[in-house]
Every structure is written in structure tokens, then in C-alpha cells.
Length: 221
Image (cartoon, rainbow, N blue to C red):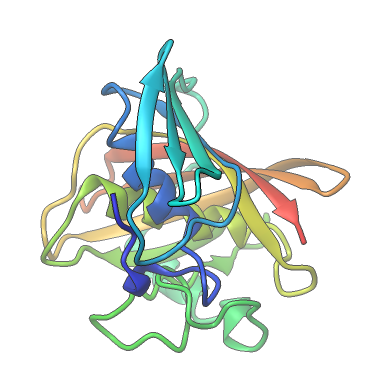
């Protein structure tokens, strides 16, 4: 497995959601929990092994990068959606436009060009949920859906004031959206404990149906 440098979060490591999504493809189907043990390296061969239902991914030096295992996600662990137009309006006030710890992030970096990054810009609603429109790229894959579930949850945490990195992402992808489909991604912060913040995120299709859902743990740096 290789995480291409295009899919960075911080400049020198993989976007957490995309990297977790790549690792999740090695685990059995269903809901998967991926714990990132170190920043995922880019453009190198990552090795993996499965033991007792846990997939472990290693860097070329044998360092543990991530662990993936099957789990469950409560059907109620979703963020209530808004309409496409409401998501577009919220996105205009995306805080990352003025203060972004990683402005070249593949998912939410405002410095990424159209067609190069996902350019998801989650703005905050009055109740502190986030919402962003998401036009699905031509080449859609499960790891891209994991990526899309990542940053909209993260920006429910005040990342512009204190940067956080993804520590754990648990996701269930029920259905892939169609290329070009106009989707909405929602995020919400559900709690915090010291340096940890907890979030949920949900992806909705053009018809308003739930396509994917996730919960995450973020670690302040």
C-alpha cells in the first residue's frame, strides 16, 4: 500500500481520513475503526499483517502506522443534514479561509486547485454543526469517502485556534455516491477530554439519503 503525496494532510504526511480509508480496505467489510499511531508517510511502500482480526500497517522501518479492526457504529450516530443551498451558504464562512493549520490539505485546503483536492470547506452553523457541499469527483472510491468524512468533523473543533490531528476514525460507508452527484457533508463536535476532541460526521446524497457516517477522535498538537 502506498499513500501518494497528492493525498497529504499536513505537508509531509497523509490526510488522516484518506489514510484511514486506505487502511480500512485491508479489513473485513462493514464498519471499520482505524487508529493512526503515527503520521502516515507518503510515497513509500507500507506493509501490513492481520492477526486475531486486527490489521496492522507498518512503515518501511517496521514502525506501526495504523491499526484497523471491525466494529459497529450506532445508527443514531449521525449529524442531521441541511439542504445543498444551506451547505453552500455555510461554506462561505469557512474559518479555514482566514486561518488554516494545513492550507494544502487534500480535503479542506484552500490552496488546493480545483480538481486537485476535494476542496471541502465546512462552515459552522449557529448550533456549531458544520456543513459543506461536496460535488463527487469522477473517480470515486471508498477511501475518498473516508477523506470526505474527516475534515468536516474536524472543523467542528476550533482548529484555527489550536491545530488538531486525526487520531481515530470509525466509519461505515453504506453506498458510494455517483460521479458528479451533489452531496452534503455534515460535522459536529460531541465532547472533549483534555487534548482529545470527539466528533461525528455524515455524508448525504442528492436525494437526502444517508450514504456514510463516522465518529472520530482528534488530538491537539
